[in-house]
Image (cartoon, rainbow, N blue to C red; front, side, top):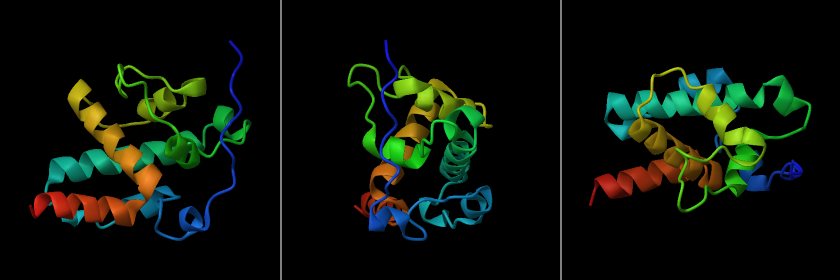
Length: 137
């Protein structure tokens, strides 16, 4: 099976704006995630954010000029599999999951990847707003 081409490296102006996605580990570690109001959620989400950044730096990703954030913004796992059982095209999802440092259960991996998906597709400000809106209902 041929490997599909990577998603376009062109970011929308919104995606290129500072704060839309964390770009460096320092950015991810400095994020104020206190809106989550739960250390478990904060630790898992920060681990996922850092995993995306570490995966983006892998030589096999760099050589193919894949922007992992952009890839995840365009990717949805098969409905019958979810992120737990989806490697993604070219194993990008698996490579992100392999970069996570917290020991994840199936549930926490799925939860983390779904939150990463929201951030990849909508940005950190939208994730914060979504989280606060759900919590305040």
